[in-house]
Length: 90
Image 1 (cartoon, one colour):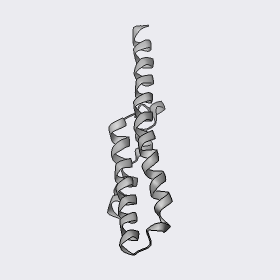
Image 2 (cartoon, helix red, strand yellow):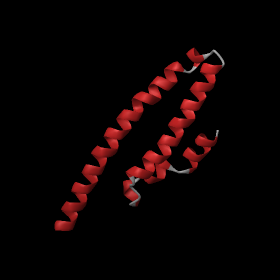
Image 3 (cartoon, rainbow, N blue to C red):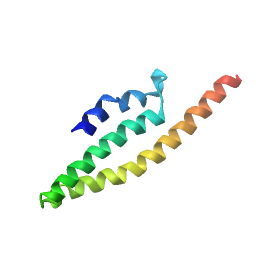
Image 4 (cartoon, rainbow, N blue to C red):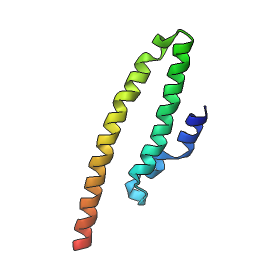
């Protein structure tokens, strides 16, 4: 529960808003990583309870989207930097 609360209260959605000028890939990732740890702990609790099949598909989805998140953070940062440089040079 600790990782879940910390992940939610780190406001990864706030830091992912480039329109407010708050784009921060590191803070987005930090919040999401805490939520992933919460999912891992939940899955481990199910494993220890002998009921790992209940959360297996959810945990697999979270693992898959983690990789996509890293790629998207990189791509959006490149786009934002390119846009910033274009505005700066005009």
